[in-house]
Image 1 (spheres, rainbow, N blue to C red):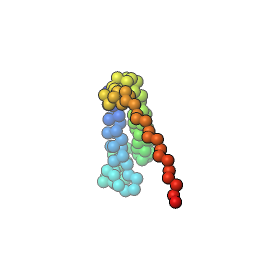
Image 2 (image 1 turned 30 degrees about the horizontal axis):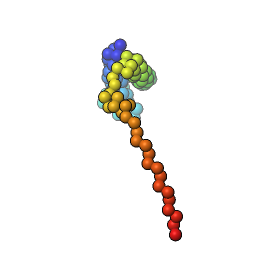
Image 3 (image 1 turned 180 degrees about the vertical axis):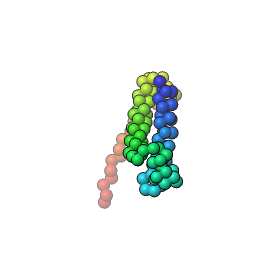
Image 4 (image 1 turned 45 degrees about the horizontal axis):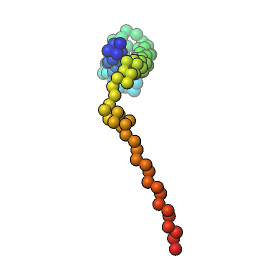
Length: 108
């Protein structure tokens, strides 16, 4: 399950990178190389910006959800199976008692 989620995250991330490069918010991006008319002809629709924007939001939200699912999957698979030696040593040690405060000498 973990491998499937990571594979989907990598795939959606690559697609998101391509979508971001295709966008033309202020005259930049790859679609700027083909001009706005060339970009619409390449995809064959006039409202390409709307579709690309919706796909960008969709991939971004899906990556967020997949990362959260990966976190829950990972935490449910490993339940205290990985304990550090340092954690075990620290659990067995006690803190030394704090020194008693020294009485303040009055100023003369």
